[in-house]
Length: 64
Image (cartoon, rainbow, N blue to C red):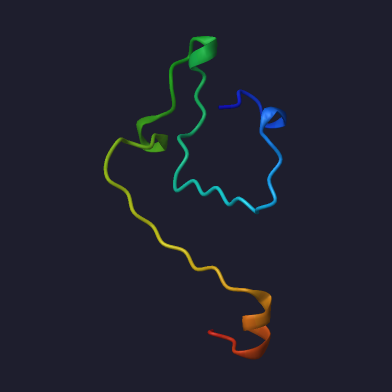
């Protein structure tokens, strides 16, 4: 496990990292408190979907 991105081993693959939701930034480190309740991501079940297709597919058989 690497603590910093430059410590990761080189890879020949492309890696895709998806974040479904990110909690808003608050000022807790400065003493003003955390993000407003409406800006927090709660620990409840979440789902999402996505599609990936190649440029070649788009040029020859556009799925849209």
